[in-house]
Image (tube, rainbow, N blue to C red; front, side, top):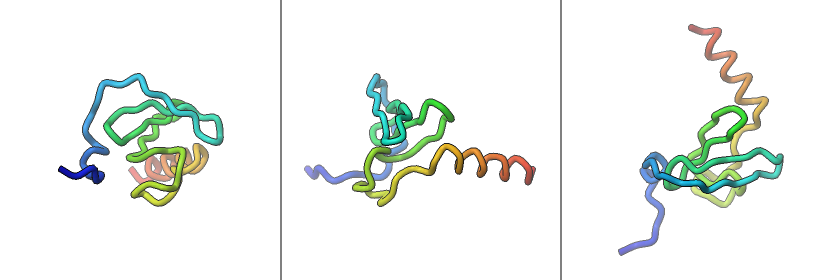
Length: 77
């Protein structure tokens, strides 16, 4: 059996009280085996949001950037 990460685990819900705080002091709550939700804007990130050392290879988008993306998406509807 392998300990390798399966990308589908990022979308497999789990019951958890795990909390992380990122470098910008935003709180993230575990939603799936590998996925986290930022509490201030409900942004889902399918990996550890505190490090670039994941299969995503980067940190999550900023709160401001997510807000702007959502405004643009809403305007297109």
